[in-house]
Image (cartoon, rainbow, N blue to C red; front, top):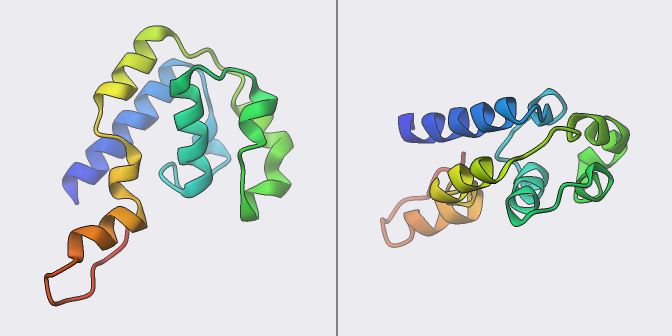
Amino acid sequence: MQERNRHINRIHKILETANIKLSSVVTAIVGKSARRMLEALIEGESDPVELAQLARGRMRPKIALLQQALQGHLEPHHRFLRRRDPGPSRFSPAACWATGAGSGRAPVAF
């Protein structure tokens, strides 16, 4: 659990230094929509409109807010730091489910 929290804090710090305020709009920075946006940022997408369109479910009504929050500037060194990190997908419900396989008990999703 501490490793997961450190990972999330690193994500917040990288976004903060890039002036991207995603956490002010999304509830969970490692949620499905936020992960999709983070992955697109890492891959080089920088258009806030395109990034906001990656929102799913309850995030769809917040597209205008997401566009404002995603107007920062991610530098190459931010992308490097984010790539070097294990990645938020490691803490996704699917990944948590996979780690519980064969343990004889139900896995706990974060």
